[in-house]
Image 1 (cartoon, rainbow, N blue to C red):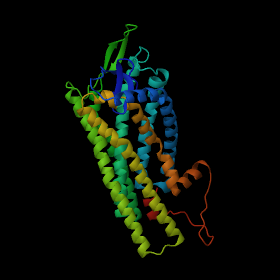
Image 2: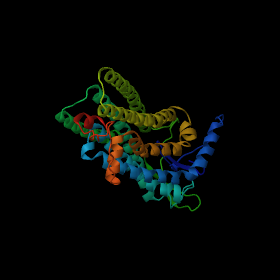
Image 3: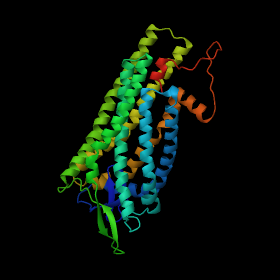
Image 4: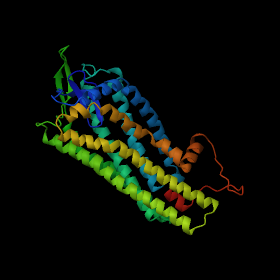
Length: 382
């Protein structure tokens, strides 16, 4: 986000230059703010096109994820949550496409114009901000749910078919609960964002901008502070803490199970393959958790600093907004690569579904191994 003009729009993950703001460099501020401005200006020229590439590819790959994960033999509690995650990511990136086209590609300048800041586009911007904050919150809490469900499953696996069906149904209700709760919890966000009229200096025309949040100043509205703290704690810091805890427990349980099975069981070729696939699935889910932590934890810290430190929001958070956006979008679009690279079952199902390929596996004595479709595998692997 560049420093041109006097109007900016930056709210948490959604950054575009159309929010009313009095951005003045304070005396004694460190030079790093100027470096951030230069970085923001240099990257801002390409952000719209880069985000469109990520969004289009991410929408397509998440459609692949949904179609593969919802196959009958792929239905598991974990895959149900991953399907909900893919839907949330598609909504986020679908909303970002018109946002990036209008505010970055067609009108790349930071300055406001009557065409850029029309009432229709600013109304869409409000909708986009509220929608993507909700879907982003859904995504991170689904990742928390993923770590918890996987940990519970490894700790006490269910072998019976009835138990497997029950856990799948419970996962569906869990996904629905996350969607509904995230929508309700973000109500303060809907109330905080406001649009107001302004006058374009050059044409004396009416334009519309978002009301400044004035974070880090003495006149920040109480509702704004409540919303920012709720968002930072409930949508960033607490989920990251829970993911760290259950991700660590998940890793510990996985290594414990592998050690026990290697100690007390003599694996045949097929059972050894099944254990390897089981471990790869857990490692893949841990990779998803780590990506969320790398993306979300720094944002949570920056939001807290924006609410508590004078001028931090204007001089640090806003210039980093485009970078945080593209990192979040990449995180939304990269899961397909992880699934294909780390899950044999996902990769084979994708190839059969879209390429018509059937991959035969052979045991050491040359006999084809049957597909691992037993109850344990269906309930445990991606």
